[in-house]
Image (cartoon, rainbow, N blue to C red; front, side, top):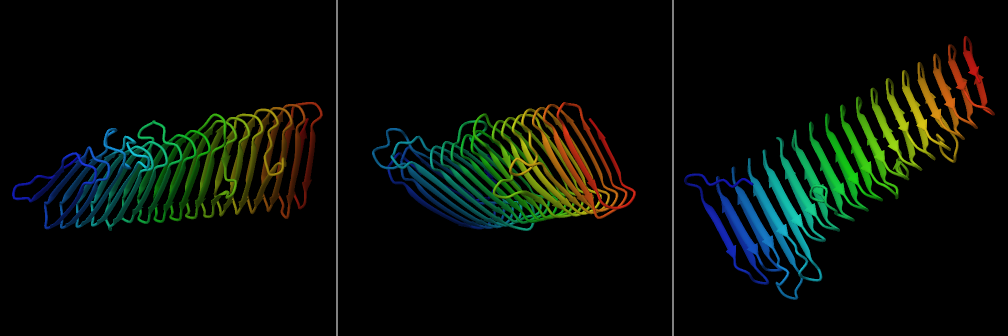
Length: 425
């Protein structure tokens, strides 16, 4: 926690002794100003700090106590800073003294190099950070307890946002994080531990990175990136109910890395993961039962790698363009790739490649390629395997199916010239 106390600087200090309804207002217009508001021991603190100028700092401390009375524990902090290199710190501790225990924090910073730090402990806390600048900014929000919300809007180049709900591996059920960055080279990290969490990240510039980590059940991660060279990395860890991840990347050379460990996980249900430009890549690993995957890529030189290491998994993917590669590995029983228990992999364009490996019983795969010089390679080991392959509209296509179990069925249909088909049962 950084408080600037420079020679000749002005400092405003407001200390409130224990009371039930404290209120303070601080206005500073110059550089190198410091404001400290300490409201502890009450249950309805209110603080408003306005600073105009560079190199200013604001610190707000608010907390209620378990013996503070019958009223609701409801603290609020509002900080506005206009200028460069300003710092805002807010710490709100809620012990749940009242029946409607709520803390709220609002930070608005206009200027380059702004930093915002928020710590909230308790139930029903809300944090809002708005940073509008051209250069890098920092927002760090930590919340513990249930039903908390955090909203961050950041515009600068090289901005950094961290939202920790669960306050480093604690439990924070039913919390929400909503982050939007419109600059380039930004980094967003959202960590949520608990059930029924919701994380949404939107990034509008190039070379941005979004990392979402969720542990618990019924969590949702949603990431949207529209710039080139962007990266999304999502990790969801659960044990019973399903988690979901919705991804959209519109720029070229984008990458999506997903890891789901647990049962009934989903990547793309109400909305698929979508990459709609050249040179994009997807790498997803699902470990558990009942996992589902949907997705599509448009453009050339894209890659999809999928690994599903359990029973009842489903994968549905589509690629349109040239020189795309798709690799699917399923290990377990009753695996299926596709919708409605049907294996569906679709590629349209030139020089596309599909590799599918299924190990277990009751596997199905259906692959369609339209275009020239396509390659399909399917390996199924286990009882009840079924493969159906269609290559049409071109020449020089290869289809290879290897099935090393009894009662296997394989169909290959090729339309065009100079095609090659191989089935080994």
